[in-house]
Image 1 (tube, rainbow, N blue to C red):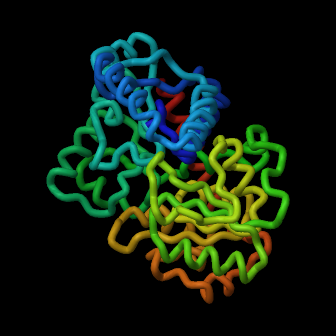
Image 2 (cartoon, rainbow, N blue to C red):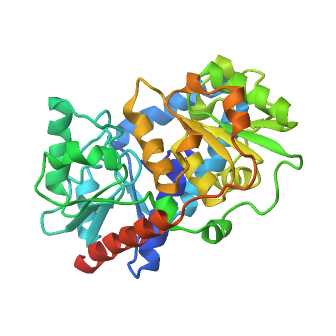
Length: 357
């Protein structure tokens, strides 16, 4: 989920996992691959060019900023569905992860490492299913991934029981790779210049919930903060973003994304990785999930680890101005003992994988 992915969290976790493995002494890079054929990609590019005039100029600028970061991560040549098997002749071991590479809704033979030769070392690192329970079809899809993976680690502990029913292999609970790097490590790529000079509330909303935006405006006004937003994420028009925010930013790279969180007076989000970096930079935050979706298990696991569950709301519509005003807006104080223990065991898992490669 790396190539041409414009999601900030996806790019930063890709950077982090490669960085950590490289620092452990392995020569690591991201495999760049396109799910279909070369012809399919050519037709897709042509279609986008035809539609370019209907895509907001600001969205094109944002995509370019993210793509520059994406391409700065050491990576392979471009593989296609018909050529990905050739990667077996290049690498000694393969790691899939992290983020939702094992979400049953879009898992494929590449994310499941089904293309890898049996004699090669395979591992999942912090793979996420986005699910706590699995139906029969989902079990079938994930069983194949488990069979193809020698060393298995998962990002959300609540999803492990359902997966453990499908395999006799040990499943290890590990941190998202972004949490394996310290604030100092991230400062090496974080944009040094502060983007917004005034005190501000940073809103990073992947979803289109109206209540979150209403409460964000109310909170910014109550605290005397400027409201900073990244509208129309995923290159999709959303009416709820029209006119939302004092600063609507587009030309924002993952490096800038880190800076916005680092310097925010408060972060309000529905994003896992925005919550991760709020913890890393010790910024006060609130995050909400969607009650009808099991995806909230990611935020639940994360806030439990750091002792910040009071800042997690099960549903977007549960968030109110009164709730946010009760939360301290001082520097975030987090519980580090459980995190440090998890970080150590996560690094040990990766070391075992590299040693066996």
